[in-house]
Length: 497
Ligand code: SF4
Ligand code: SF4
Image 1: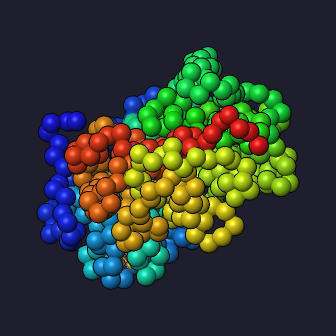
Image 2 (image 1 turned 60 degrees about the horizontal axis):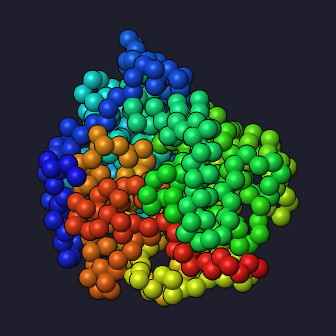
């Protein structure tokens, strides 16, 4: 833990904090280097005519997205969103109120693209895009995890996530991108995953994992890669290959496929589910990264595509893949769209195809964190709310002790872990710790009421973020657990169906 970063005190009854101006004005992620920028097709450094380029790009984005235009035109300043952002609740900085974050872009839009803003800027709060505004954009559009919680409470459904994506894209095209996202995307383009893990290292890691599973269970469970004509191509976040607790989730997927008798494979070419292009609002990069998955599926001749535990990757797969890289007419017609690993496991449980021993998880008292991109930007199964029900039903099938957190902090009201949306970088640690406050308060309550010792998530970013911030709030780092870890622990491997 960084000694100079203090977590705010947990409160028993969360209250709306008083405003403290500019507490986070100095929070800025490292800037992308020229190499990071240019590998994504952006200028390497701030271009000379950056104001003109930014204003032009803003116009293009607004004219190309009816939604963005509506979001910029319709806010009535009702204030319903002001206390809904975890970053405002954790930092007290008024620029982290969603409406204020939107206004950073809205006031520039008004200045250049509305009659009143062009002729009477002061009357309508319109401002030039100058150096001070550019600096505020860089700071506060990198204090939005694009979680969309504010949009749930806005009477007009204004989605601040879309506005921060647009703001970041404009910053990229004028040459001031963010290092963390852009460097990672460059690695995916060249090597195929966020980690820059080359094929031999991946193969080696997976072989080691098979040996570990054999040592633990005495059973040969495969973790295959690049196997042609497997039924399933599993696209999973590369953190699943080595990070804790992610890797235990990968072991769980392998045990599920093993016991269900489903042939599957990973791909060394498309060895990443994450697609950080969404965080920077880049449609070109979104498509380019996603295309690796279509190419891998065709090359390997698989019949189904299944996505592992990753929140924003599931949003991209669920919402955008068909437009970006579809149609998937080469897949088995029974599985014409990508499936979430939770859908696969839930279906197998429903059909009695997994032999589960719930007592194997009796040492766990479990709660579940709904990840934002799953909860508010996608769904699972064929029923409304499936994204809430399916993970919980899997937990209940695999363990005897489950307790939800307070209703106002789960399902579509869930609080972000504090590290989503391309903010999972150590240079934003102060923001990440403070932004985790509302989730930590809800966790503290369920721990106090029910002796919970296990926090389950189905998102690689949430898992990494919690592993890092839990100790700041005096929780054990290892209470964060992959959903498919408890599935894997409950599966009785010696009996196959
Ligand atoms: S999308 Fe999430 S992080 Fe961004 S302003 Fe809204 S509540 Fe805050
Ligand atoms: S809730 Fe919606 S309309 Fe109200 S201030 Fe926030 S963004 Fe504007």
